[in-house]
Image 1 (spheres, rainbow, N blue to C red):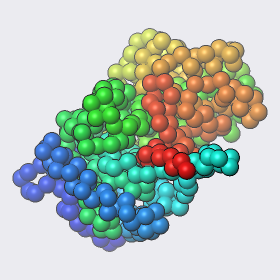
Image 2: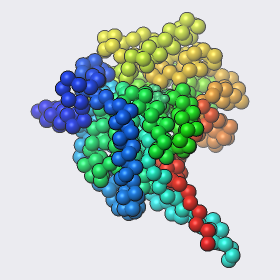
Image 3: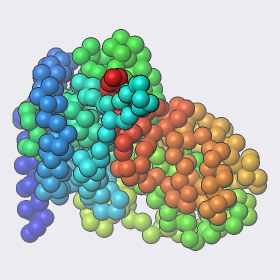
Image 4: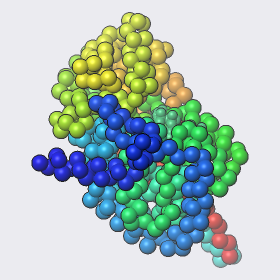
Length: 474
Ligand code: NAD
């Protein structure tokens, strides 16, 4: 009974945003491959129109002031909470992630949580010199129009990460969701726009060409981008034309180092979710695990034990906590990396072949033991349910291996806390977690180094990143 009611609600939400019958691009359910809905095919022309509207609305939004904007963001958070279940169901069908576990319901919950934290975070002017002769203050003003370009893995949460601070600081925002997951993002924006004034937040559902236009648009002041390193480079090139400021959250290939003395049974569950949250399709997931020889076999065994207890299947089935790959392209990358590892002598501990019985895009949790640096499954971002586990004997050597790639989003060290903190200081990554991996918090800055991009999101640093600093001197 309750299922029927929820299905109706989700359809109503979908109908608000999808293209009319007979138009649009079909979006398939990642698990069942049935049509979820029709994505509107907006053009570069539509994008130009959206930017013009956002530009026109910006001064009025800015003039509301922090207090009123924060109150509206809190009201938006409440609206999202009221629509949480249909949003989670639509997200689950379109993206593939299950309702339960750290997945669709969790993601929608994070949207409200981030909005509330952003609304509650003050960014006060700073007095930088006050010596009797000079009084200088640093203020933070709105930039203007912010372009938000997102990926398909955490489409709602990452959109909110981009939108919330930008709106809070008095900018208006044009969102270009991934072409793989436009419907859930457009539905989220539709819910938010029940509360927000017109044209403060606009969504344009289009392809890469539309994304490229948003990044290069002369009337866009800042681009928040989360996606691949390759696209990030193109956005940097585009910014040479419009001088847009950039926040780039790009790909990762996070290393974890398990120190000698770590307790395999105690860390196995957290290692598992560090690697396999969202079925491994997470930017800051653990993607290569270096384990000291003294605990290597036990860690592999403990991880395999946890993997065996985690049900995978269609997201709307309440019992599942792991889902399919979101798209065929990503599925092929994952399958290819596993085959390559096998051909190079790596030992497949669990998984290792498509889970065809579950559906076209399902690939089981795959632990690859005796993997080695230089193999593609280690050196390339898998972005799927695969974890290579590499043996080491010397901690200095493990640190060097963790640092050898051109990625630097996250990393983790497992074992004695003080020893782990010393190791963490030597790792080249924007975040190093100790005895956990991948947890984010709305007040803790998050961002990458090296090929993983630049700029910080969240907290006060995140607000500064969508602001124009202005000095008042005198
Ligand atoms: P992608 O780079 O292919 O696409 C991301 C977005 O960019 C899409 O909306 C796309 O339409 C748009 N786009 C494509 N070409 C463009 C261009 N020339 N100019 C402007 N926009 C353009 O990435 P993806 O496949 O959707 O996402 C997977 C990647 O994202 C992985 O590498 C992953 O690690 C990374 N990611 C990073 C983070 C992070 O916070 N660092 C988070 C999630 C995903």
